[in-house]
Image (tube, rainbow, N blue to C red; front, side, top):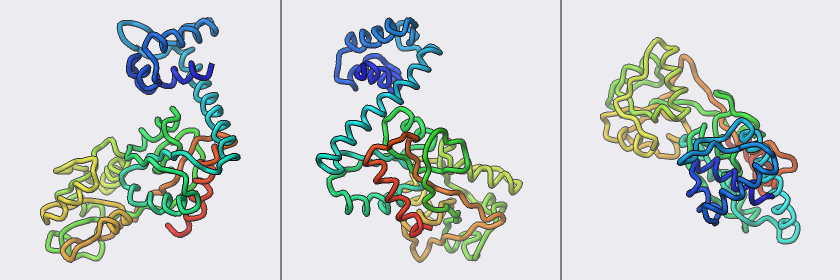
Length: 296
């Protein structure tokens, strides 16, 4: 039964019968037959069928919720028993918003020192994607904003607060200031993250609250690309203080505090709300709580 529920999760993830079957290592007829067997056991249709995958029925959505819970518990049980015999092993899958990526090493490095047999996969994703990946059991943890937008059914460990800086050339307008306002920031040519990023939505809201609108002359989902444009001296950007420090400031690039208001957003670790947690996830939560004071 568990393997057939895995088929449902793959179908929800891939939204395509062929790709779902491939991700499960089975043929498409095998996957389709497995889904049909669940439908026969439940006595309802779970999947809208046509020439291609068309989504889940209302009953299918409800079964999918149970499938995530059952499969998650099954995986947690297997990992728990394995940890009893061999200690913590395996791979931790973490997704982080782009502005938090430089801080991931502060968590993974001490974790690996304590648990050297654990490996990591770290992905850059939007805050919305992180929650979807968590829900569909595709990652073990996320690092994202925890106060600005709804984050669903997760456990949270606050890590640090994000303060904003105007990154600009020292000889550009506002480059000689010790602080600037959001209204002033709106007057310079900005390069910002794309609108699908929550950081961009936060900045747009702050600019609007100052009576201005966000009109970036360049958008990208890469912080590195934004910073490379700032370094030309012809662009400016708004970045969290910690990422500005990580990228490194040159003699010609300044990071100026943005006040009025001094906006703050909390970044935290989010993990599925499941008890008991898997051993590796529980260890990650413990590590996050241990290092959080040093990140403040």
